[in-house]
Image (cartoon, rainbow, N blue to C red; front, side, top):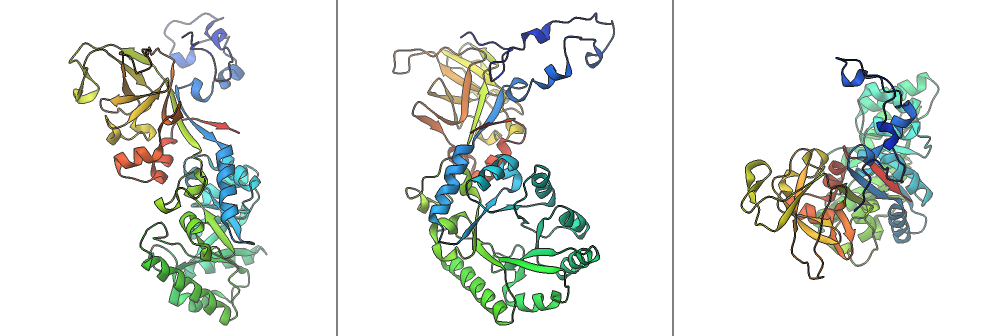
Length: 427
């Protein structure tokens, strides 16, 4: 198909990099060769999919669309916090944070101090909440990078307040309330006593109070209603003793879309910002667009004779009249081994069966050499592009499809699929 193996994704021609201008010294290792044609600038220009023929594409216009969908759903005056923890669920924290803020989010949430520091070093100055209480040793980092921790132990609160006071700084925090999920947070019926216990630290400033629902995405509402009732009662109790709870927030993606009564002062947009419905009940009502697709190029094409095996264990045997194509994505890239022979790969607008055990760094798929109903036979070549997640010509393989096979949720697969592969951002 005329694919140039030394062309970049944007059409750059790197074939001149193959021309050596210096003499090689006998016995030298590869990293010590004198290759005068390789300037640092030229080598640095070989990036992303040019280093390995597999990559993830992130459509930032989809992120903008999904933020807009959430904002239209929110009650008047409710702010939006964009959750960009775990590298924005594998989509890239800095790029997604900037996109979400430009689309109308006003605050950001992360899981760790390091994630918050990454945003600050990228020049992002929006309020950032760390959705857990970090170790006391991290307090100087919170103060230096202006990150707000979640607070739910007096030991941390005291250390945080004292360190801030020592430097003449404020110590803003969000109080985490455990209303029944029993993961983190001050128990709802102990919240007033807890706040009284730490109130003498003048640097501490409670700028928010929140809880997290365990079942907002479930059809059964008994536990959800219990958590919501407990949270509302806690907020009332705090106000009755003169405590300003700051921004009150409890809605995650499911609650944001399903239950307007949870919107309060702010809502947290997580998985739905990336285009995934948190539960079946929201499908058909909200136009969420997946932002992530997974791409690769064929690295090898084989035509094994009938009954010859493919991959480890040789659980797949060629039926004949097929080509077996290899692509450089494996379970180390988050393409789970449990998907082996249970999913499809899109080639030239057709669904082709993934065959053989998925390897650590590679997998294979089968191209039937017979016609595909269009009177045109598929003819795969090295360098041809394929889709492992995405849509083309009316056919698709979605993250949800893969989740159904391996029995997990989009959150997990998205985080795993982008750990090693480079990201290409579409605007």
